[in-house]
Amino acid sequence: MNRIKLVLWAITLSVVPNIAFTQNNNTSSPYTRYGYGSLADNAFAPQRAMGGVGFGVRNSYMINTMNPASYSGVDSLTFMFDLGAMAQIAWFDEGGKKGRKLNGNLEYIALQFPLMKRLAFGAGIEPVSHVGYRIGGYGELENGGYAVTEWNGSGGSSKVYGTLSYDLFNRLSLGVKIAYLYGDIIHNRIVTLSETGASASNWTDTLRLSGLTYDFGLQYHRPVGKNKTLVVGLVYSPKIQINGRITGYSYNYYSTGDSIFELPESYGLGFTFNELYHYTFGADVLYQRWADAKFYDRTNALNNRLKINLGGEYIPNFMTNKYYNRIHYRAGLNYTNSYVKIKDSGYNEYGASIGVGLPTVDRRSFVNLAFEYSLVQPDVKTYIKEQYFKLTLSYTFNELWFFKQKLQ
Image: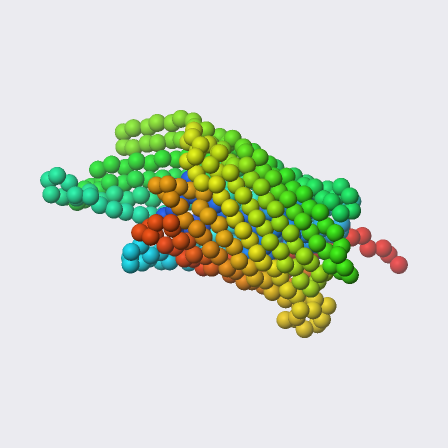
């Protein structure tokens, strides 16, 4: 046991600096040029395989950061640790011009354990947004030449969080998640003249974000039959102003200043229906008021966002010795509209997912695989259409660290 603890701490100490301080390589979407970039899904691999369902998920074998109230559902003797990474291939189509890009990165790390009866704690690092694009164009000059312009961007934001969850009554759990958000979003514009091949201008904007965020969760769980439970979850996040320092520079010019940036008020509602060690299915709805949140000092710069998730998992027979009957089989669907505005228009995103939870020898820990397909359909037909296939791989370590054996 001590060896396992040492290995986990070594992994944590080596991985955390990578996740916390390096620029992400999670996307190549041209739409990340707008807003804060592509919003990250804070679901972990098991929930991603179930279409992103999480507000009503409550069980003892997965960490669910989507609703902080779920943490008290862990067994009172259990320590859990989760580490996830992703790989993604994307296809782009703009009027018959097609491209392809491969991305990948470490994504999240989390832990969870009980503090006392009815009270549980969790902590970790997870992404908030991703920026990664490279696009270009050219225009003719008066002297007959032309100028080539390239726009590229990188970076994003992440957060370090801590969570407390308490069972107020036998059927009602409350939770709070407090996080420190940080990150740099970098945009570059490079103009090159055709006659000389030299760069005529090079401008870089860096937006440095920081601030505290808060999520409040509630779960009501009620038995509805033998080994069957209905769980209803609510999550609320208030509108928060965050620090935003903008730095711009060119060859011989430098400027810096502050602007008002806000994260939106958000409401999440979901449910799951469960039979212990056999199946779980449910649905979520998330609504975010981005139009009311200030972006570069002004409201209505972004669109309100609606996200709908459907999904579940099935375990044929968890108590059998046949391995394939103990696998957790998962699938789901989701839909969301874009929060960013592109000349007063946007896009819709449709997704489908499947995955498995592969139990290890002890039947408590899991290797999780989630396979996701998404189609980004812009409102304007001439805009770029995206498709991408994402693989998320995670390891969930689940162990009885607080169990005291009695000597006979």
